Length: 227
Image 1 (cartoon, one colour):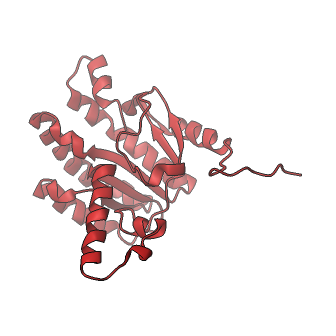
Image 2: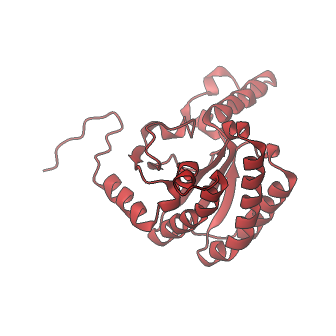
């Protein structure tokens, strides 16, 4: 969800103004995915690198997270959206952690879209954490080298139990994945738009999904021509 700060600067406003105006995009895309029958939506909300931003911006983002969870809970319930998180959330302020835990508990029984917020997350952090877990298990004699394959590694990632993404949408025009789901995005289709996140709406989501539907996914193989 890129471009909040640049969008705000174009308006002659502070960066947090862009973050506040991005909430509508989150709401539209989450409800749009729920309406379309999408099973999983993961939003890269705050990276481990984002902790290097000015404290005033970080504090404002954390407050915005709490306020948004409070205000949007009825929307989550109405659309049967289940909320969960990935990332090193122990680093979040206690008020944020508590609000996240409360919201996840309330929505745990919802059976529609699973909305995952990546908070204090990065792909390298996740893979490093998975390796740490595997080394610890090996030291305790619980696993051997022969136990480790792709499925085993996936089971030690924070996205365990979730399918790998089929489509990654990046707003703001940047041509990189910025340390997001490095393992899981191996065969995801990418859709890059120059539109900044605060301006992203359901129509843009539909455009990305149609583009995805028109691609041929070979997964490194050669597909036989259809008769």
